[in-house]
Length: 422
Image 1 (cartoon, rainbow, N blue to C red):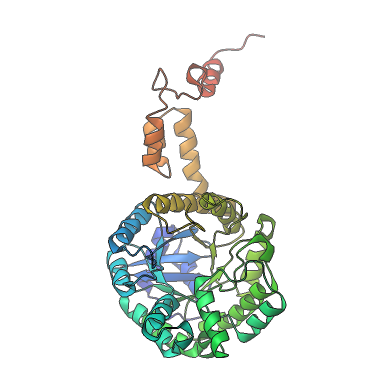
Image 2 (tube, one colour):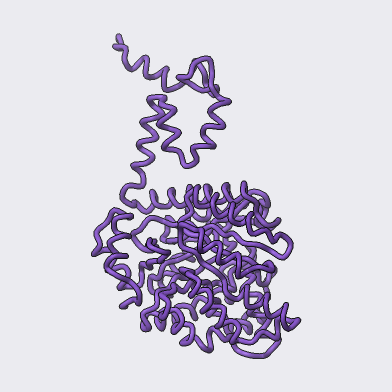
């Protein structure tokens, strides 16, 4: 595949960031197994053989429509290691929020265009069913013009998918907001998904602006009972076909995946996606491996993300403690970002990615030396390290209050230096 908008400069940039040869990046892009997201004068590589990346979602809602708060979340996510952000705004000022996010973000920005198209159609015409497909295509192009790097488009939902859903109803039905908007429109109008029916038009826009298509999982399972079902797989099969069409047009593609799935099904889901979608980068929400932990879903998602990443997922979307409960605040954004980073790093160790475990080795050595400053610098969240460490100093700065004078490392260290007499 010859991708539109991919230059030698962008390949060199990504190669330097990843610490691998530019030929490997070029080969990955050519095969479609690596995508390069452009943002201003920087690029981000996502895909096979590269460091597992993470995305942080921000954005307003109809109930919390505070642009400055979203800018603070953007800053918090990026300062804590997010590789990309998505603006999922559905408040009244979606255009203004997006302009601010793209303008202020130091990392690539993604969107879900149907959010804006649906919200504006409801405001202008009084009902989602009255949305003109032209509105949707217009929003996609506006986002591309604004400088968005990638867009989630639910192109794989078809009338055939809905028929499968009717024949095999779910307990949690549809939990994708973008998917729900689109499915509702399709049912109300008795018409095929315009993003699928006019996919060539989507490709024209993407090719014109160098937009990466994140082919969305509108049928992702929203609970354990619905994992890896016929509707999910029907959509995935369609996405595999659309991936080939996109590559033929020189358009880069990411495939989005589940969702809520049991931990024992994660590896199979990654294998299916990679096989059906020809090795295209896999972008997963979590996955969440249990449904019983509201308030702790960032931990649930980190467990699933680490397993998915280890098995080949390339891009993890964070989940915050607010998932299923409300719009996240700044603290929840930080917790979600850090949890996803930990999952991604654990996945990279599992993948045997060069340089991943060496970070851990350095931490191991710093702990053995009780070098607290080095440990702080090496930690995934130095401010959290400092906060807890300040409360955990024992009688000596050399140890902590967990073991105090009975520090295991110091005890063994002392006797290893002593000659054993038999």
